[in-house]
Image (cartoon, rainbow, N blue to C red; front, side, top):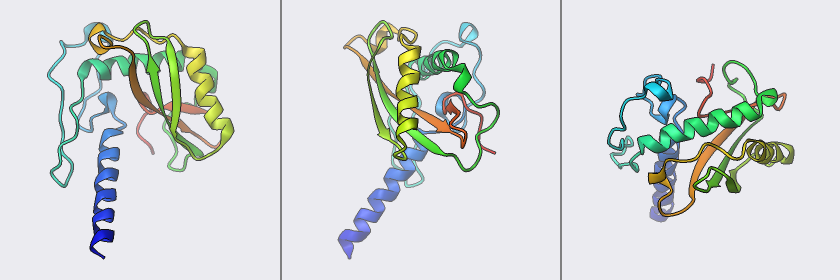
Amino acid sequence: MLKRQWILNAAAVGAIALIAACGSTPGGRPDAAPSAPAAAAAPAAAPVTSSTPSGRRLAARDPALEQWKRQAAERIHQANSKQLFEGRPHHLLQGVIVADVTVDRDGKVIRSKIVRSPGIARLDNAVQASLKSASPLPAPPAALVKTGPITFSETWLFTDDSRWRLRTLAQPQE
């Protein structure tokens, strides 16, 4: 019984951490205000840390990484504009797919792996195709790739008509 409770507590903490890390507001932080255009962005601040309701600290967010992820998402949207839905995502989505994407110092997508999927092959294929058509992404800042390629996660939100939008650029759900 004690082991089962420990497993349930660990799962709850993991779910809270995942939800906190997947914020749908600009910059990925629930308290973030809409960001300014890249040219007018303020100098990079110290990484942002946050805590879960249980008091556990989450990994620091690197502002340079967050800004670059937004630029990468804009490139993916630009290259796949005919597949995007407009407006806010509906409460009930056909699928939410998370992919880990690895890029080299030039922004070329060198690997992508679906890490969360509803198991609908055509949606998984659409994610892979969207990355292929958008590559190369903008080159990551040198500080992010000084030790080699960088891997980041992105989330695709699919509506019932199989149109999608990246969570990084999507408006909050209705």
